[in-house]
Image (cartoon, protein in one colour):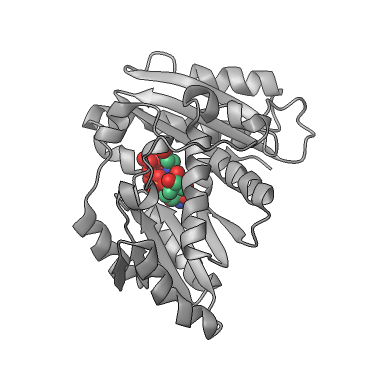
Length: 281
Ligand SMILES: Nc1ncnc2c1ncn2[C@@H]1O[C@H](COP(=O)(O)OP(=O)(O)OP(=O)(O)O)[C@@H](O)[C@H]1O
Ligand SMILES: CC(C)(CO)[C@@H](O)C(=O)[O-]
Ligand code: BAL
């Protein structure tokens, strides 16, 4: 497995591979890898010849400086996991390499109204930062395909909108959410959960599963009320949002007859903010 710190070194590695017709996949990450990330590498291997994983904790998408500061960075462990998974190359630039003019570099594109809902409402400007870095990563790798996790449901929509904005010829593949045995969606931030938080965190997946399991029994309003009630009285858990939304617009679902429906949640568990979702149909 090759490790690249500069775009130039990465491009030099990829050039002959592309010239010989190899299909390139990019798996963008912020490191602190877990089996959710490795599942993306595995899907990439089914869809391309050469797999590049990027590890870059992108400052422009963080709206809380403390969140950025405490983001876990176990780089040796990450490299060992990628090596085991059969990843071909790791791109791990520093901030100067990605933002030569400084991380306050100007970027703004129209991502549609969904940018301002849900995560976008709680982390203002987050998706401008995400699309800014993903565009830079796409420019550096020029992949044929790129893998993203359904766990960041809104992120996938925003990246597809960015792709359409620039008319980029890259196929986005959305990979299913990998969960712990008890249902908690794997996330790099789970490491911050205390044992008590870890127990309480199960309410996220349980509330989503409730909606999926009981979708035919109740109205949309009843489903939301009953799912939210599951959070009552759980110490240290504060809901940011729980919604049943249209999967294309992320607006609250108007009727149960809509084609794409997804339940999405974000909650603070202790001092850790977690997100999760389940597709209803
Ligand atoms: N449990 C999971 N299953 C599948 N994909 C996942 C999972 N967790 C993260 N991913 C995907 O991995 C990619 C990199 O995500 P990232 O490095 O931010 O990890 P994360 O675990 O989501 O961390 P965070 O705590 O920042 O949310 C994203 O496309 C994300 O959706
Ligand atoms: C896509 C991404 C790597 C961009 O920094 C990040 O938002 C993530 O890990 O989901
Ligand atoms: N996986 C989403 C990246 C973030 O939380 O900033």
